[in-house]
Image 1: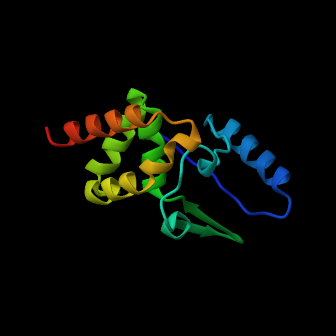
Image 2: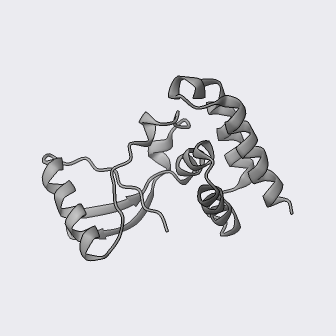
Length: 132
């Protein structure tokens, strides 16, 4: 299972410490992953986040699943491709829209130290798995 955290808080270090303590108590691996530093984000990625729920004064969102999927494809680990396949199988994301975002960010991936040919090969492998 994967989790991504992003927050906008006045005192982020206090919030991060609380998240780390909670994750430790729950035996979860939680780390801050600023996706925009590792992969070009699709247009309007911030708007595509999904509200999980509100807990007191905290609103919890899942960041744009297409951005998460693209970052996993770029990394290309087997577990990452399986995660994206899960998102597709569960209809959390759609292949046609993922393909569109992939094509949109592809020209910029080299600025993020992503090998364009490997990224394309991983995406093609994901499509092959989806069609079998």
